[in-house]
Length: 411
Image (cartoon, rainbow, N blue to C red; front, side, top):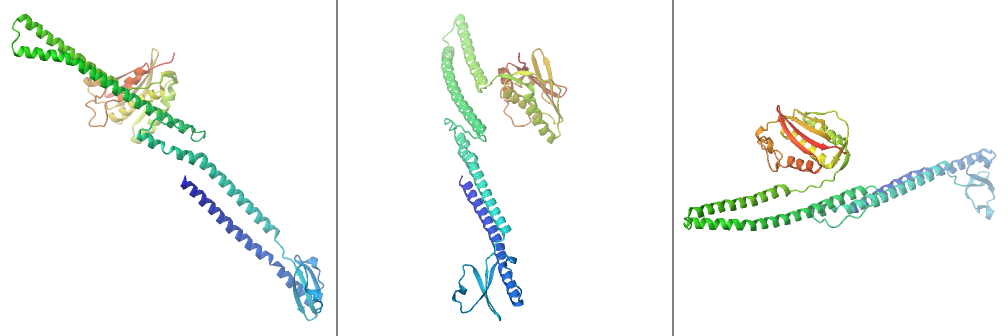
């Protein structure tokens, strides 16, 4: 804000300097033009010397020419400006007035009015920019910093400005999203800790029984074959019980480590495909990858357009990362009440034995070759498609990878 105020003062100062220089130039020309009376006085003197009758109406600045008597004391009293001219025939009082250049004065007034209007408009515009743009933006400048520090509870005040209204709304949505994610993360951590503590406690019972059985067996307390069989069976049951608890921990950890917010609604497929096609056509043209989008009819899809965009982007990024860069295409087909969107890339080297695991969390195939990644992309795609009532599957065939998102059409 201080920088903008300094800029305003500097701009006004520059305008005033230009204004002063212009006036100085015009006033200098005006001064030159008002000296015209001297020229006409010289003409009068010449006519007096030549004895030519003087007609004051023939001059612009001469008001009168009077012959005076040197002994007349009032001869030098006049309300007008005058000069005394002495010749051999006597003394003459030549009265005059300084003529103003009317055209020059009109220019002077017009220039001054114009500069005043320009200065006023500039001042109004800069004040408007300061109040409507700079000041609101200055208030918002701390928001990203506060978000980075985790200060998520204080909402943004609504901004009536049409320039920042949507921006403020978007920032507030981001704040609410981060706050909601933080709350869900804390709730998940609490639930996970509670679940682990509960299962750990449950595991202690069968584990203690196994330890008792093992000690009894090591000391040879059981000699009866029937009792030994019962002990062995008990150990097996307790081991199965522990295995079931471990399976519960693994299932809980793999299914609930991420939460997804999906807002299903009806939307047109082209609203998603248009943005995907425009972005990747430009991106892949730089790398020289042939990119094609198959012909299709537009239709209403049931789901979350933002999440479907995320799914297709994940598939496309995998195609770019793990393909050979020769060709990527998007094709469409219909099956029952679903629209199938298939992304195909050339250069698939994933072994057939690994294809069943590509949608598992944290799993990465042998074809990654040190490429960066977390092994969560396709897992997230599957979770999102299931949340939207659809599905996703993949098939490697003839050196190409085909990943198909099954989208449910609106009823």
